[in-house]
Image 1: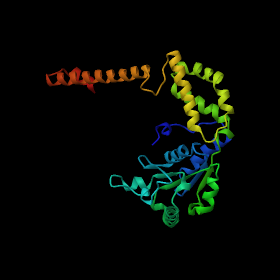
Image 2: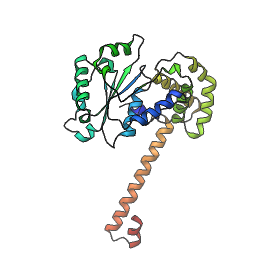
Image 3: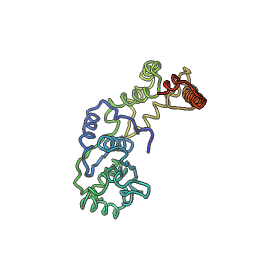
Image 4: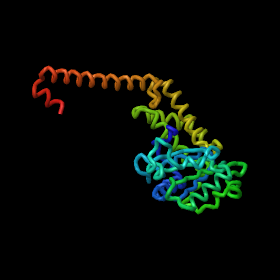
Length: 273
């Protein structure tokens, strides 16, 4: 599981991203196979996670596996998993063009025979300079499936209006409310122009890394907080405050329980309720 995308929304101002959000909602109730295509790092994994979250039941399994590592057994529960939660879950196969041809044929036959007995399958196929999508279309048995839905996410460089939105969200999650506006203004002055003209492919992780690097430098320069990093002093102080508060609450609880054992008053007992 990638911590960076567990709770992140699908961010962007382009028409493509608006369409992707609609696609996620429409496909969230579909049990049949889905197809996501686009360059590596363009957000296919995040879209798969949101489809699962929007249409899955609580605790249903969400499994991410790469195409080269995928095995049919990945569709079924292990000894310590609840079969119903696995069956009602989702398996996202990243770089599905790398699935072994024999395994791909087995998966195709399994989906076509009775897809209700296995989790929802979402395939992520990479669009590469060497024609990865075209090769998958011409050689993989899975390309012959009747998908319930498919969506192609273009390269980040083809939707520059999303670069600003993604960067702004990243800065917002990294800064304290009182620091956000000044940090965003400095970013737009010194960094945004360069990022808007960079020849991005998929590269959302690289964009996030560039923004995070900027935030780290600004936090160090201005001696302000960088949220989400326990190595930063302010965040460490916040964590210590929470620990101290929990300790104080425990001490109050223990003292009260001691007073009850020693015959505390009715008023003291009422305070606990």
